Each structure stands twice: as C-alpha cells, then as structure tokens.
Length: 325
Length: 313
Image (cartoon, rainbow over all chains, first blue to last red; front, top):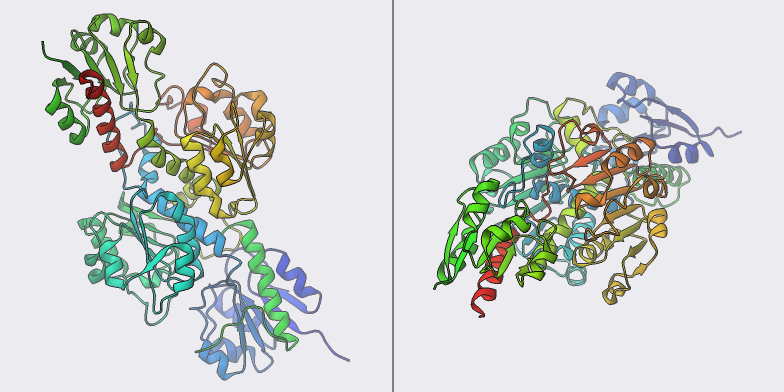
C-alpha cells in the first residue's frame, strides 16, 4: 500500500500549482499572503517529500535537516535562487527546481516600463499634477533623455537581458551593447547587439541595465568605482537583485550627479525602509519587486514549480532543474 | 526694410541662434506664457512669428500684427491654437514641426501604456507609503502585453511608432482605425477596422488622431460603453477628443478598466475635476515630446521653417 508523497507549500499561490500537486500528493499549505515565520516553517517541513517555496524562504542546511531524509526536491517559485544553498541540497541528494522562461516576458516588459518611466521623469510629472504644480506648457520643463538616438548597455546577456534588448530595439536606439562572461554571437546578431567589455559598456551607454544573476562574482558589482565610469547623464536600471548594487554608493552617485537617474525594482533590503535616502530623490524611481507580477506569469510560475516537483518525485527529468556548479 | 520676427517664448538656444543669424529677431525672454496684452503689442509690424501652443493665434492677433505678417511657425505639431482658415484667407503661411516630434511622442505613449498596464504608480506609492511587505505572489499583478490586441485610433507617424514599439512585446494583433488604409500598416501587420470594432476589440486603445469635427468629443459615453472589459485607454493626442466627465463615469463602471492621459481639456485640468482623484486615471502634464533632443530639434525646425519661409532659402 503506497501513501501519497507529502508536499508543503509555503504560501498562498496561484491555484494552478496546488491543483496539479493535489492530483498526486498530499498537500499542506501556509495559505496566507504573508510569509511563514521561520519556526513554523521548520516544523512544517518535517518528514515532507517535497517543498514548494518562494524567494522569501532561506533553504539552507538548517531547513534541510529539519525536513529530514524524506525530502527529495525543493521547487522555488522564482528564477532567482540566491536564497537556496545549492551545495547543501546536492550533499543531501535534494533536487532543486526553479522557474526560468515563463516569467521572461513579464520581467522584460517591466524592465522597459521602468526604464521609460525613469528616463521620461514620470514620477515627477505625475506628482506635479497631483500637487497642483501643472501650469501651462513650457518648452524645457521636465525633459528627460529619451531612447531615440541613444546607446543602451545590457549587463548580463541571459534570457532576460536578450528579451529586454529585443523590446528596446524599435525605440530608435542607435547602438545596443551588451557585456557578459562570454559572447553570444548568434543571438546578438539576431537582436542587433554588439559585445563589449564591461568598462566599454559603462563608458558608452546612456542607459545601463543590470540583468545579471546574483552570485559571489556579481555581489555589489555596481559600486562607487563602477558609477564613476558611467556617463553623468546616464540612467541605471536594476530589475535583477538588490544585492548586485552597493546601495549607499548608488545614493551618493545620484545625489552628486555622478549618474543621471536610477530605476530599481529590487533593493537591499526588501522591502526598502520608508526612510531610505533613495526615496528622497526625484531622480530615483523605486518599485516593490513586481517585475514578474502579471496574472499570466505568476500562474505559469506556480504550475511550473508543481511540474518540477512532480517530475522529481516520479524520478523523471525536471522541466527546469538547477544544480550546484 | 529688414525682415522682422518675434518669438513668443524663451526657446532652446539652438533655435534662437539660427534666427539671430538670419533675421532681425526679438523675443519674450521667459519660460512662461506671454500675457495677452503683451502678445498683441509685440506682434505689431512683424513679418514672422514663432509661437507655442499656449498662444491663441486668432483674428485679433493677426489684426494686431498687421498686413505684413507672412508666416506663423509653431513649436508643435498641433495647430489647434491657430486660426488656420483665417491665415489662409490672408495669405499667411502656417508651419509646424511634425517630423522631429514623433519618436518621443510614440515613446511617451508606450510609457503610459506600460505604466497603466503594470500598475507602476501603485507600486511607487506602495514603496513610499510603507505598504511594501515581503514578496507576495499575487500583489500588484498587472496585465501583460502578450496575447493582447493593440488598437490605434489614427495610424499617423505617432500611431505607427507606437505599433512598432509594442510589437516585440508578443502582441497578438494590431488593429487601427483611420480615414483610409495606410500602406505602411502592413509592415507591422496592422489591419484597418471600423471604429466600433476598434472600440470593442482593443485591449489597449491609443488615441493618435488629430482633433477634427469628426473626432472632437468622440470618446464619450456611447463610445466607452462599446469598449472591452479590462481594456486600457491612452490619450496623447489632444484633450478635446475625450469627454472627461463621461470618462470618469466610464472608469467607475469598469469600461475602460484604466486610463492614461497626457493631454486634457483644458490643460491643466482643474485640481477638483473628478478625474484628478480617480485612481483608475493617470494624468501627466503634456509631456509627449519632453526629451531634450526633441525639444531642441523642434526649436531648430520651427526656426528653420520661419526663416526659410521669410527669406526663401
């Protein structure tokens, strides 16, 4: 007599995932919108076969040990996996699934939206209307750089970087540059982007987009020295992870005019405290990590996480597995 | 007798310097609009006037200038502030700046489409007001461009520019309504449809037509009732095309779901107008062409238009 595998879901998520899991598993769930407290999580994972988690749960040795030897797979409903200790999982034979691709379009879209809102000074414009500062039309009021004739630099030419480049092309961009550990000549040719070193991208670009994963190599890469290499009128956009930016250095760069403006969907910490100096700046736009926040993409992420988990439980290849390197 | 020109506002130096080289030019040295009495005084005896949309270039101004006035060059694409038929009667040429403005206007319209669809303002406010908690899967979810129908009302330079820019976002279908079929529509795969179809089938509807007797106040209660549930309406053309009281009621009824307006009637909209408080309506202060490069190019174009018309070369 076989019992169904046990899965614990750490939050209320779009129904597509839990519905799929319930066809084969016994599902327990923290069915709330707010994150599960750590001690609750540690007791809830005891003896489960699979864990469906979000980026708010730290998947480390402590948690894996609390689950015990029954745990076969962790599926995170995110493309970032910096909250997962891949090494610790590998040591215990626990597979890890994540959700690339299904959120690429939503993230590319929000990245472009954030770039446009930042460069065209939407925050200041909307506040001016709200605060009764809108007078009659003036030729140079609230003007911004605009994409027409500009040079765009994509730092990190992965799925999201490439999708963003494709979306930006028809905005009359003059020059699309990218940098990464390795060149991608085929994709770059199709998109019309050119490979350059990081320093060359920083020096030449009017718009610099951080599209890298957070790793020990990229942690706080965007710091004082890097901002110095950027144009004084440049616009910096980060929709990757807050951890790739040295945030105090960013504030200094914005306030001193070292760079022109910044648009951030990710910060350190998250949420950003309301007294953060970044929020006092007109030339900084901050969004609350909503790059993948569309009904389509969150539903798809939930479903893919469930499929990752079911595949692993059935000893089949996972649609999207991530392994320790 | 030397050729005299007057500029009704402080414009970028790149435009001023073109005129100073070629003509005897004087100007109103302020960022702000010329008061009416000053306008009527300073246009007297001018052969050419460079104006902006804030100047009401009506019969009274034309009379005040005198019969030697040969050309009005406006720092805009729109000419609604100029009595064009009266100018025609008097042999006064009216010139505008269409070609240099389209890219930034198309870009701004796409900015509004994405801003509204992805609820960026709610996101910005949530950060400021401390409503941002730890990451949640279903918070501030917007709608994606993928699989949607984009509708353009008026496939001119700006309308076409919008279609080109949104196409890579996996738009399913692009439809447009115009007076007649446009050759270049096929390059973005756009199909000509009648107005009722445009209203009924667009997920994102962008108003890009000029204000004419047919289009003025055409976006009214009847039109909104035909719009798709969950749709977004964007207007970056001219405010008079939309009935703003009807729009407020329509947004409250959910059809369209949300709107973004860069132009209103009047501008600015009075602070107590219901649309100003409607959370489903984002209003920006006529920023369509507000990039440094575009405004400079508009100034150069308006200046060139003026002196070429006056000096013939």
